[in-house]
Image 1 (cartoon, one colour):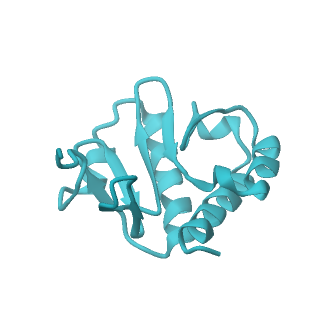
Image 2 (cartoon, helix red, strand yellow):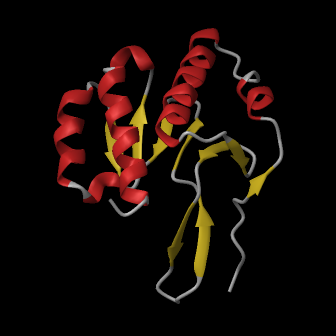
Amino acid sequence: MAEMKTTKNNKSVDAFLNTIKDEQKRKDAFTILELMKKATKSEPKMWGTAIIGLGEHSYKLASGKENEWFQIGFASRAKDFSLYLMGEKADKFHALLGKLGKHSMSKGCLYVNKIADVDTKVLQQLFDLQVKVCKGK
């Protein structure tokens, strides 16, 4: 079985975010980071070369192998931000998405183009819910 390519490392999160060329996108990335820090009450770590993860979470694969992952994370992509969430299993998650603002969703990822498109209070509630889901609450 292949090992996971995306693993936690000691690269600097701030240095990575400061490589974002667009000033507004860089500011948005730091805003997302602060909201996630508030939800997890933990410090961010780089995962691989382009994902920022906060908190600790482990899950089992169908094979029975347990993987280490983060409770909540994000990546700044060319077009948008990919916010890694698993809370979609919670009914409250869908209700909050209806109040969030402009976004799209796929399995485990919430995509937001810019912070101005969404209600940051609702985004914080989504992040808080994600952490509760990871803790089994």
